[in-house]
Image (tube, rainbow, N blue to C red; front, side, top):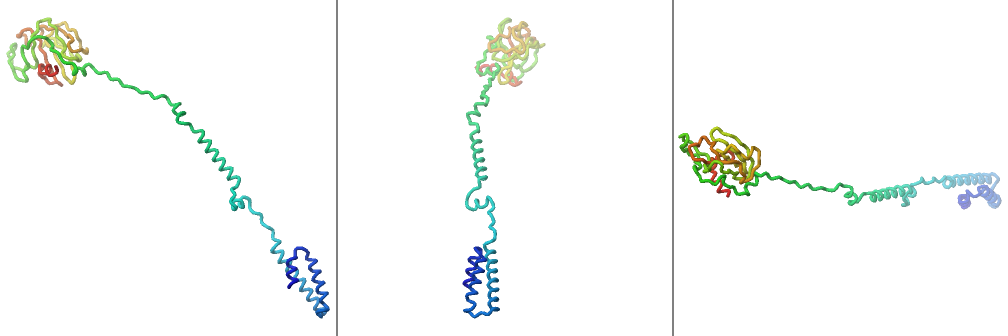
Length: 270
């Protein structure tokens, strides 16, 4: 067994020397052990077989070629990042850094934007809306000849008919100046068959004033804007429906189409 172990340990060094050593050992011990010629060859055959078996065993354990590690995996197993991964990461980081550096700043964005402009709307206030701030004036300076009837029927001195008197009659000699009671716009200039030459003016908040029995020579026309106190004409004798009365101006006021007391409005607004 000793020689067998030696043969196993030295099998790859020199198998021929091992066989020769075993043969010498058998020859030296042939006579001391008292082996016969037949027994000697049997023992020699066993030694040869054992040496062959030992060589085969040793070759099967040590002669198998080593498999080279696959590239890329051994480095990853040992904790080393492949160079390609490092390159990719570095490139991505560099690209991200470049992107951040190339982003425009707030100042750059504001520099290319057009300047903001502010438009201030201006509103033109018509003359009719400013009349409330101006105190009205009486159309003429004469006394009241006939007052507003407040819807009650009164007998007409000219026709003898009972009817409402929807205005105020102011005494005025022919040719006396008649003025607009407040700022406004002339909406009508007409000659009425009963009331003679008339002028209508629209004021603020839906108020209108009407001047009847004027002379033919007017100083305003329809659509004209007038201020309070503006002369619109002169008193005349064109009012046929009240011809029985002394020379006067027939003056009416309406609020959104409804007759109102002119004196009450003039005094309330004054």
